Image (tube, rainbow, N blue to C red):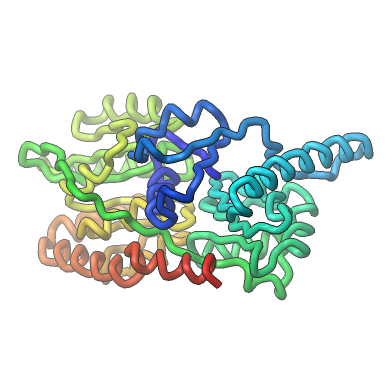
Length: 365
């Protein structure tokens, strides 16, 4: 059960899940009919079973001042739990995997009886909507009802912010993002130019303001180095206009369903996020032998080891970012070494083989 988007890490993760589960005994449940338009972006087989379950209750608060409001919400929660239960029952008590980017959304489905439920959280958990979140974690989490997140840093935040009891911590798992290796990659034509690449939605926490400042500084120093940001988002047009006013060599490309073609042609991968749960794009960059310059925040530090497969920088210090990028541009040997080390780290921690083993530990035990 998931959402689909035009572009982004959640789509990449879904491709991984589809490979893990296979298509014959798996049903993809979408949260609304509009997501159907993006099915082509994850390259699903035409025979794959897809169902849209619209109208499910989103968040469970149960903390309204009015008793009537709480009873009304409880009724909607009950109906949603019943719908998922009977859908699972229809398919032989099928397991339920919920993949979310909105913390706590559908968390109450951990209460669906008799079936195995894995709640996969990709984003940074916010402070609880209500005490009901902790209540669910306290009484629902067990060997068959678990939460999975994508980095140890995110797990620590989740335990703290949702106030999950210590005795339930064993049912909160960490399974790193991985990359499904593409069968063929079409590289982007660069006309002899080198470029520094960023992938992701153009949103505030991805730090596009610092990115543009750093890009301007680098392109003024190097005539053969461009910057490309691939991804859509609410700030895309604002920063696309700002970049065009600065230099034609700094580009916000917009969404692309095949970002691997850009990774295959890039020189450096750059992720200046203010916070990041793990960062699938960084793992993809490591697979493509790219040195990475990323912020020393969240799960990014679990992918990039400073001075081994890239450089870690303060997300708010633009001068530090510029210095780090220049040190790689000016040292081709270091650039190559970081890229090779990144691929080794990908193979050891973030390959599909490792992902499968970690997921098997959850689903087969």
